[in-house]
Amino acid sequence: MALDLARSKYMNDLVGILCSWLPGSNPPFSKQYTFGDAAAEYRLHWKGGSKLPAIQSLLEESEQQGVFPKVVLKIISEGLKYRSKGTNAVTRGELETINSLMGKLGYKILELHDEMFLSSFSELDGKSISVDKVKLAGLGNEYRNMKTNPDIQARGYEFQTFLENLFKLWTLNPRSAFRTIGEEIDGSFELDNEIYLLEAKWRKKPAEKSDLVIFSSKIGSKSEWTRGILISVNGFMDSAIENFTMGRKLNMIAMNGNEIELVISGKEDLVNLLRKKVRKSAEEGKLYFQNTTPT
Image (tube, rainbow, N blue to C red; front, side):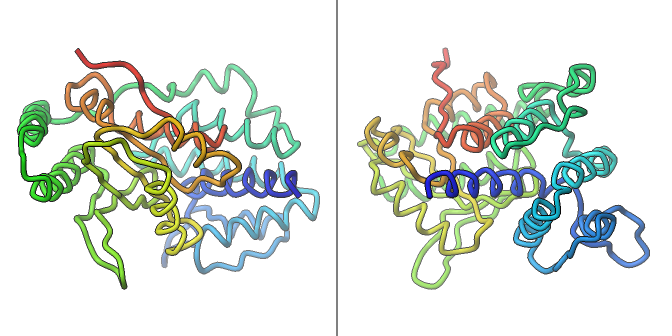
């Protein structure tokens, strides 16, 4: 049972990574290669509809038919062309994550392990997105002012707005706080074609396991492919992180105040930091934190 659960997690993680590599279907008058085309090429069924479940079904059927590595390689080769036309550039880190997950599933695609091929892509921590330094400095001042605000409730709302503007600076298409039936979401943003719900906490004490469990449940109530990020300015209890991640399928990443200060001081690129967190979660099932202290 444990092996089946682990395998299911690796397949689900692979689906999440491959989702942005191709469109599900073509808009009218377009000739872009799609996941549906990959399915047709190997005589597999593409059920359409919601993208992630459809990809999951495609890969599971390809494995049953003995063409799983071929289908994945086809998605990668066509996806390299597709993503070269946009701003979501492929990184070496992404390819190595795919290789790692394929290995855990019992496969190795030799072409994707070729060092000459891998070295042609930038590292995960490659060139940072160019952001407006003046606006970044302004956000830094806002953050420092919030630290001195004695009104905890007002500071909480200010923090939500601050995060929305921070994500906007990195063109992550943020949405401000909104309500769904019976609950409030502190906001959301888009990273590498995936939507992340936001939970922001600024309390005197570090976040506890219950904070992580409740937010994870909130994410899980939305859809199979929803992800989230819990930002706790005063960090997380060590025992909370350890107990929460033990034997659990993660649907979220986490950030602390130290990492926020690294970003607003210009010492860490926000997108690269988030991608490192996603990769750590996908490969090891752990919540990653950048421990360098800003000076």
